[in-house]
Length: 252
Image (cartoon, rainbow, N blue to C red):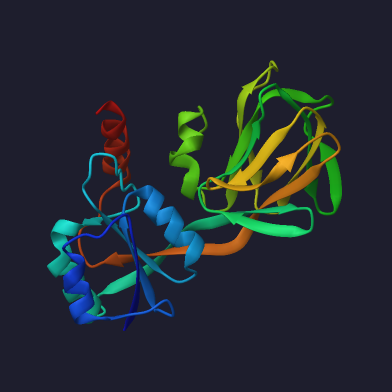
C-alpha cells in the first residue's frame, strides 16, 4: 500500500509510518495529520480517501478525525490488515469564474474590500434563471458551503449545521437587508452572482481566486466531486462529541 502524508508539522510518530509503508504522491490513501486545516488541505490536494488524524494540539480541533496520534500503533495495524471502510462525507462546492472552475471543501467566499460590496443573486433551476431578491444586497459579502464546511466558518457566521450531503448553504456576512437568513439550495440548483458596486475578493478555502468589481459575475453549485474519508474498525465519535470538541476549542 502506498501512502501520502500531509502533516501540520513533523511529528515523531511519523517514523513508524515511514518504516511500514511506501510513501508516495501517487498513493492509495492519504494521512492528514493535524487539525481541520490540514484535512482541508489534503482534500484539496488528494482525490482519494483520506484518514484524518488529530495531532492533539490546542489549536487543532480535528473535527473530522476519529483517531489521534496517540493511536498510531492501532492505525498502522488497521491499515496493514486493510481493516477499514471508505465513507463519503460530502461534496465539494464548485465555483466557475472567468472561464475557470475551482472546488472548495470548506467554503466559497466573497468578501468586501474596505467598503461594502453590492451584488445581485439569482438561482438557476432546469435551465431557468430566477431572482432570489428583486434588489441588490450590500454588506461584507457571503459564503457558500456544503455539509462538510457547515461546522466551520459557516457556523461562526450564524449559518446552520448541515446534515444533508445533497444541499449547499448561502450565509450572509453583515448584510443590510431585513431578510438575512441563510438560504439552502438543492444539488440541482446553481447560484448566479453579479456584482453591481464596490470591490470584493473571491476565494475558496482561503485560496484567492481574484478581485472582482462592478459587472463581474460567477456561478456556484454543488459539484459531483466527493470527499471520502477512511473509517477504522472502532467506535467512532458521535456528532455531539465532535461538536462539543469544537466548542471547547473556542473556549480555550
